Figure 1 (cartoon, helix red, strand yellow):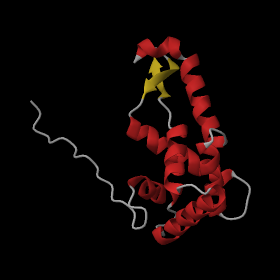
Figure 2 (cartoon, rainbow, N blue to C red):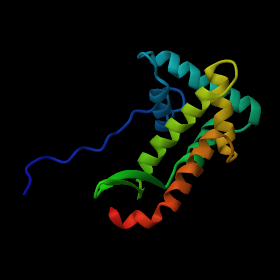
Figure 3 (cartoon, one colour):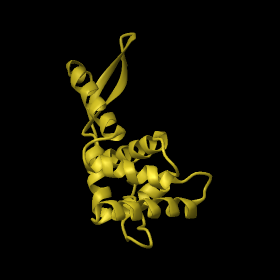
Figure 4 (cartoon, helix red, strand yellow):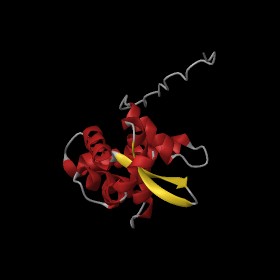
Length: 155
């Protein structure tokens, strides 16, 4: 029997304004060069823009966006007998949420526009409406997993 202890559950702290862990996860992914205050500023300006544009709660829109982008399955490379196969693997909801946040931020950075806050706000609104680059990335991932379903027995 192993004497090593199990890894504890990672409890993320919530942000000061919205008191939400999802917002804090987004802030930590926006983070560049360790400047968290700028990261908070970008996200809060994006939330203000969402509220101004839609008139709804920006937190619920961002939750809806992350839920729309989060994948259920991903493909992982597995080397078997000298050739590499893409094997579909179901993922945990926490990992799906982390991937969704990463994809939303990558899509918003690639977006044309003025300022990260406006690009992030636009991408979150698009993702909540099931459109935009991040949702397309999720659909591509699901399509790849579906097309490689024949290799799922290699897990």
